Length: 293
Length: 178
Image (cartoon, rainbow over all chains, first blue to last red; front, side):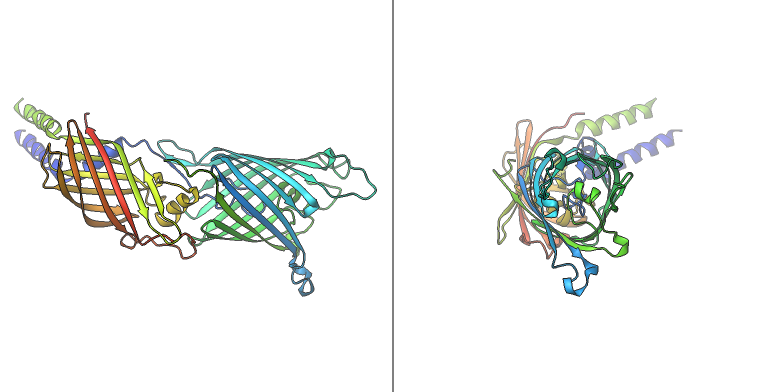
């Protein structure tokens, strides 16, 4: 009986000095209340055509140029579509780390657009946990094309978009996003068309090396316009990151790099070979005072 | 009955005698002088415990808490250089050598294992250890070579950073009481 206690006491005595520094570390872990936010789920504010949960940080201004060329299957005479260029210029800005706004102008339908994006949940581990990041997104788009001999009311030129972005970075290489959303058109081509078009989008990013990644995107529409033939938008891309730049080279079937356009006005069928080359180039600038520590 | 008292005494002795200090304020700055711009980052979320009896000391530094002037730089630092999702903490475990307890003027060497970016290396770092009333202050400045810790600089990145960074460490400790 006594022997047992002695052995126990001796063991106890030895156990302390052996891993004294690890004990100190354990003591630190006990008092650890830090939260680890998942970063770099997506590198661009767009995955291909649509928005990602990436936001620009406070006082960061992004100049974004999105190019969409003609159809590759137009052949050599059109230089595989490169003769026809559609462009969207945009300025996008971080009001805070979780609230971004932006305005843009696209050649497609001479459209002016604007958006607000609010990230209300961040993926995190540690003392606080969340498996996903979430953002609310809303945009409007105004078609400013002249219509010869017609008088179109201003309101009828407008379409609105509402989306919930749900993204998760599964590991350091793979990120996935779901985008339930809805486009509301103030006017539709025919009375049988729905004014509200609902869709579910999916996007992903797979990192190949530290600076290269593959991207993919698809939006399924539940109730597309019926009076004109339109298709679900699909895209495959390749992303290169260099310092303050993100280059996205992509293949898609739409000309319109904004929601109302690519959801309701995509007239090309990707799987019939009506594929367009395009790219998004983004340059960010840190404005204002440097951040205070 | 006797062995129980013995064990109880043993427990009390180890917890009373250990004169531990835990950090209450910390500041780690790293500075890298590069061709295009100097890069500086600051971390106030690091923690440390120091045992004044035997000189044992540990530091735990959450890598993603380094704050940069440019937010994009911070992202690159975490994602591309330090891979902080894989290696969230920088850890130092070591021993302060030959110091005089209670002295305000200890210029000391600390020997131990520094783990950055998942790579462990034995290092010897010089610094000051100051006992001030109930408090302990530690100051140090040293150089870290990126290649020692297998931190690669992506070729495509325009912001070139130096191969060596200067690290300045300031910690203030209070007595640790359970």
